[in-house]
Length: 214
Image (cartoon, rainbow, N blue to C red):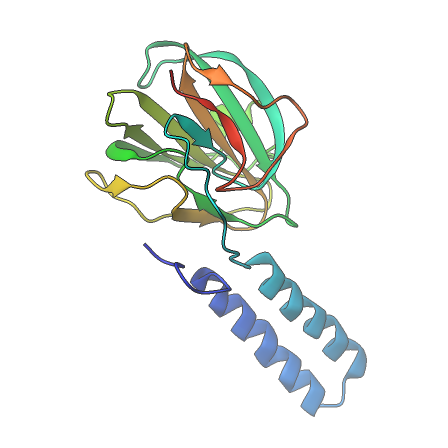
């Protein structure tokens, strides 16, 4: 897995380097206004790709938030791909001001993955879960419970990065990918799970408890 110790996610290095290089060129040319604008863009790129450390709760059955952001959906839905029936979905929307490094919500084995190309609708829309470009991981815990979490591209986000492969053993709270420039993550719980978060709640990836697998 990447970004274990880096204060800035490695996926941001090309953007930061590009903005910094253009800033230097404009500064050497004496273009003060453009230099300031590019300097601000360089600093924003560093801010956007920040990669802070997090302290993950030790509670065994706790499912933690995979993303920083705002809870924009909590409710029962039918998930036909893996669960073949009713599940509880929790959706977290990440604005461009949130940390975009995603974290594993529960410990277990990656038993399946998918990636689908699609549209780039505003990620806060409900239909984004079905129509937008997305990639998902189906995780199986030691007790046999399964959890599905899906990275979804947004209006500006055009690049989903996912590190694990099928068969990997993941630990709760570890970094597993990111989405560039505004997006969402959906988490599908088994129907009998206990959900703690509510619509409008703010989450911190790796720390906020979304609920419990029972």
